[in-house]
Image 1 (cartoon, rainbow, N blue to C red):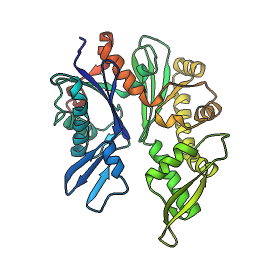
Image 2: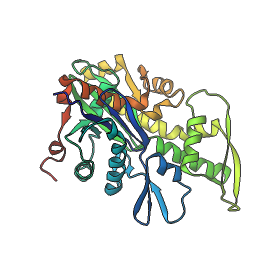
Image 3: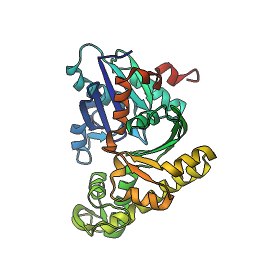
Image 4: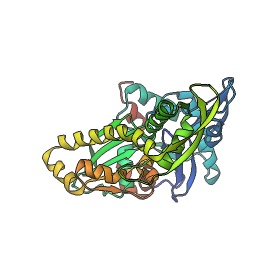
Length: 339
């Protein structure tokens, strides 16, 4: 059944994206909340603007960690507030299609259940396995008997899926993502330049300077607090320093991929060795990352267009194609009988 009054949601660790059935992105904002004296004062981009520069009585933070809900109440406030921004395009209570991770615990499933049955006020809720949404979003046919491998490197996690015949054959979530790279960079700056910087500044360094293999010799001046004097100072950070800082984490991700490929059953291993894998997620935009993985893994690596929107594209396809309705499941299916 095709529901005309519907929204699709990618509830990411870093960013929440919402689209309608016409593929209009109605919301694309940071997954963040600012709270003062126990009361919400801002969500989304407005809260992110306060991050790392708020007074002591205001706390700006992300309610999700490594792809799962860490602060249930705050996650509900952020999600319901951002959904309201899209409601002016729709009448009544819209149906909501939302991607959820596969590899989460019973407690984490309960957190999703409580958030989605709280103040969200949806007409109906359809859940989509994030691996399925990603697979559809990169254009893989759900009818294809050949195995396909997709790696989504997001802010909080790296999600690895192997699919064939419309099913996820193998799924693994690594608690490693772009945020870990930010932490690597902040640690490097503190040790090499004796400068404390925030995660916002570290992310800027990553986005502007990081690369794998050969890259341009650029630099950027950043400001922080000296670990020696305690005073505000600046330092010029080079692209080489940033790239070396993230190399270890990237190698950890690559090693996990290598292990998964090596353990695949022979019939699927052959498909992946021939077709390679699709690399997606916002962190996949690091220059030369695909070339690095191609060299290390010895298989073709395909980059997809607009990798940060892969999950949302998959959800939108499911919303618009009734033949893909089997790709959804209910809140009851999520919680099962164990919680």
